[in-house]
Length: 151
Image 1: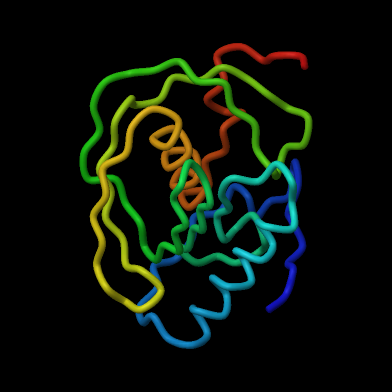
Image 2: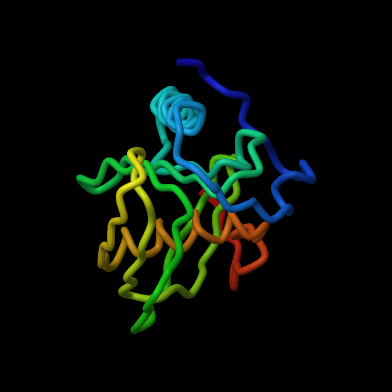
């Protein structure tokens, strides 16, 4: 496994749309493992999308609120409710802001073995999922901030 370089701030790859993964193979599993190791190397990390480490693939890893997930081609299939969130991002150090996100989301993805999974999550985990899945479409949280915060 390897710790990958985190892409920061105005790096153009953060605004690029990631490509669908056509086959979950050893290379994809290695990239997911490297992403998880990278996430675990950062004290404040909860989740990481592939383009945050320079990979233009639809991959996300999450280690947050009791969930440990390696996701391939994730997508939200249902969203409901609304919550005001406070967000930050590993790719935008020391930047925080308020956003509006769904309170509950259901998503589907493939796991690292190519098996389909469907999960419904709420509250902070719903915020996390929405934030990371946005990354895969080249959308960053600072574009959704309604008010920037100082900490």
